[in-house]
Length: 172
Image (cartoon, rainbow, N blue to C red; front, side, top):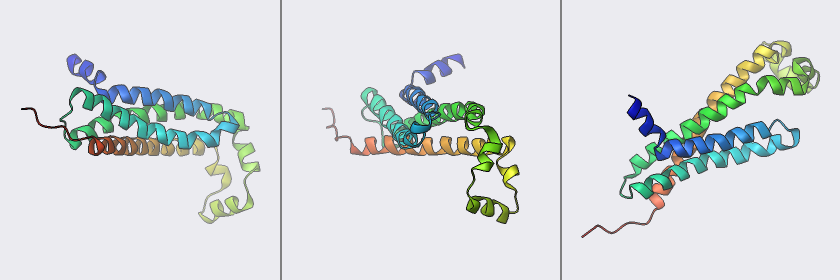
């Protein structure tokens, strides 16, 4: 069992996933700064995609004749690790972000009338939706979406690398 875990950590997908996760975590922390908050999401999408490309490059360097399905699996692992790390850091920063914004009361006081009306039309109150528990629930939903999105984009990136590689001639 331990040998399998060690082999997994040395795989190209795990290495690319850990590097992608580190970059995504740094971007999540950087998004706490108000100016950078809107800039980090597009860059995060590129990091997810890039983790898959990096995983494919590292894998194809070791095993150049791997079919596209095998390369996609490596990208899947890279995206899964990247998304998990980013989601965990995102969840851990929720209390800090709430404190920086002034908490639930400050958020509710700044809501546009249209948003309040929409929430009330759904049969909820803004105080319930934007309470600390409501914000944590929203953060969990965003974390799950982050994991899925990172996995999909990294798999796509690795697949694109697999199909765009030049064909290697067969060995004589």
